[in-house]
View 1: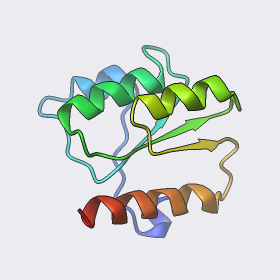
View 2: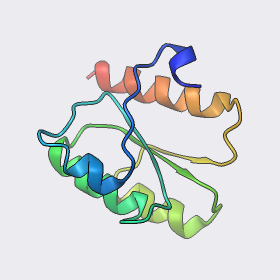
View 3: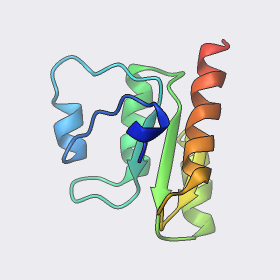
Length: 105
């Protein structure tokens, strides 16, 4: 879906795979799931922002929980997008806005 919108996408099978990828891959934006096998998306967002304080992180979740949104905001997550994501224009808009904001700095 994101490739058809013109984004270059790189995927990792787990948070650990991303964190152990050698040099931390640079990105204009990270889109991560809240629920993963090794750590949750909020924990991963915190670790990613240690490498690059300004990198925007968008969290995807199937759990519309205010506690998740509050913790995500405290971890520096730019947006929380709810699943399902079938042809979700909201996700694309969030990514575009995050990338534009980052490049505008």
